[in-house]
Length: 188
Image (tube, rainbow, N blue to C red):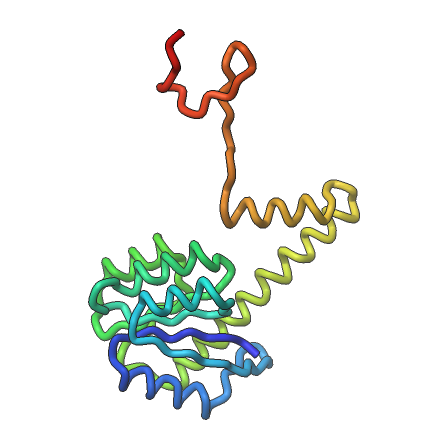
């Protein structure tokens, strides 16, 4: 089961999308994805849900009050970097499309009104691509472990570091102390 979050400030759009995704199969490459769909009219509530639960795909409207779809998807990328992302828009804004690709790495930009077949195909393709990326990462890690280049603990540490980097540079004082900010020094 693939978990999908839909975010749009228009309740009617969410109902329409949910109905389509519930009734029609979502397939790509011979694989059919069963979807568990959650809808939100508030990007803030949706982000709170993304902090609690894992999702495979986020689909957001572009134009929403308070937070646009690109800002929302950018925030979800920080929370769940492995999830796929699609953006819906009734406006053909080339600058928004470029921004969405550059800042968020969206999988597709889908126009409103959408073609049901194209929408289902885009969702299937995004989910299949996500699965492939996760599988490739897993295989690469297995190869590295078999070659003795790394341990399971190191693989997990690298995965966590990619999501939330820790301290990457340490400045040492002449007495062996750690200097957190090289501009800040205590006077004797």
